[in-house]
Length: 432
Image (cartoon, rainbow, N blue to C red; front, side, top):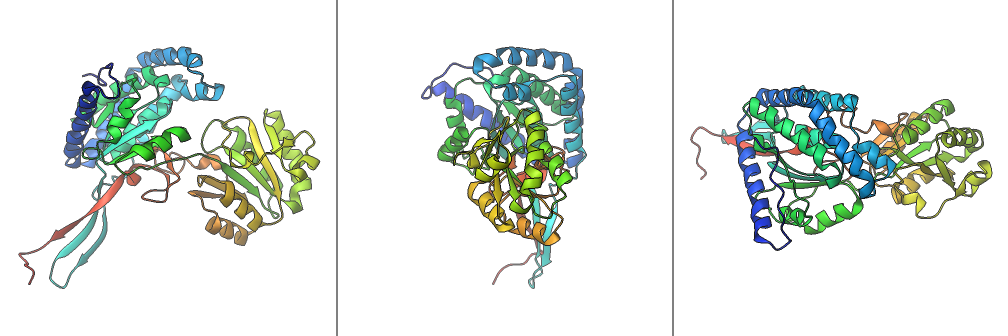
């Protein structure tokens, strides 16, 4: 069975492009209807079979990935982007294990959220159900291809994947393995489809198909997300930038703060939950900043600081107003000294991106105030921002980290790709 539709050469107004995209969406809609009647244990079996097939196809997938990595410089990818693109046996095994982790999660579909019996005798149940068809547009990360497919199947949804051209060979190989695994378990292979079209106009075609697609999820640069929001006729679940903060409070254990700051910034710099800004309470700045700055500098990180930071860290460069709101995705961090907890909260709410923000403190009241007042999807207390991840938070995998407030926020696993319906059961009642 083909892993994806054939590439076609069609311009934005070419009728074959519109027809081709509609056919993919129609196949996804039919698959979603089939999935709605398939029990969770069978969907889990499909994910386990997909994981086994990825392992069996490992040599071919890794060879396909080599072609993507070889072409990456020609696409202008940064070193961090190439790192995210690159697969090796360990990373491919992690992809397969991620599918198995999602398969082991409780089935969200069919969960009864509320139940009551009305005076009329009607039994009213509010039941969790799949969204239907997901159109997912994302960056060049092969693991995201598998994660998104897994989360969709686990929640009973069909998914249309439109990945970046930079990972085209890798994504094609992974999707082929996933589809084969689904088919082996008796699931509709068209529940996972890859849009293998170089033509960017295809995105606009899919965004117009609100009669077939229930939700669009863009995951990538701000330009892509704004385009999807502007053109989509269906709801959009979006993740803008990840300008994540670490705030070191006046009562913080400074050794803990050093470890958290360095991990949050340096453990993997080119990801959305890496720290991009560091705020330090004035009472501990003199003791804390020189040491943590030396640790960051040893990791190759450039420090852009305010006036107090530059006095304490002479190697720091002046921070611009833009720096406070920038997701660097690389070896640079913006650092400011603040006079109070509330000043830190105000700074984050003004410059942050509602993604992940952390406080290091020994004061439970400060932690509670920070968590309540910072407008963020995930507030971390005495822990690295790098833990804002579906796998780390028990979701097995994620399709993205939403910075929206409706209908899902934070890491989006299977439960976040569901909605609900009311099922009302009577014994012949009629309304008078």
